[in-house]
Length: 175
Image (tube, rainbow, N blue to C red; front, side, top):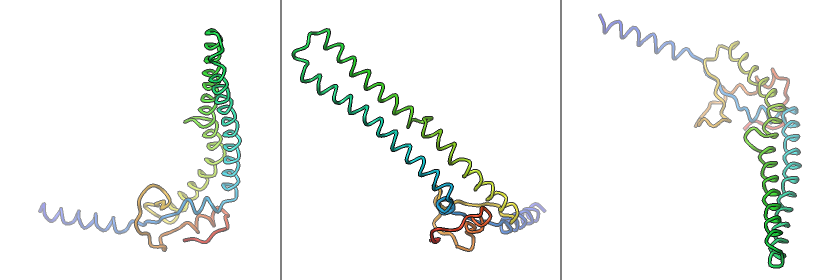
């Protein structure tokens, strides 16, 4: 009796696994065809370049202070040497602090990315979720992510359907 019950359970499990529907999307393809995403990314890049120039200027100043100190050090009294060293250390610390503030883990660039990019991503993922529920997909994989997918039959790629729901027209052809 236990064997019969086990066979029935195995058959039911096999049937339920086969009944699940799968699909995939390419989030890079979708996002890179969205004008608002491209504009937001360009704004982030512009800000990053601007901030990096500011930081580079500060580090060049530190380098200039250090080179000047090396040339003048033999002629300076000890108290001036210490004052100049402290000035160099403070300028370098200020540059590093600004670098951390702009590009650190929770820095300005990260916060700006959250402000600009996250709402777009949320809209895409909500659309994917709604579409998947409507079409009864058990799983939707993102082949652009870190997950390794060695093969995907294009008939399971719903990227175009998601873009259509988002009102996005493809600028580039799908690979």
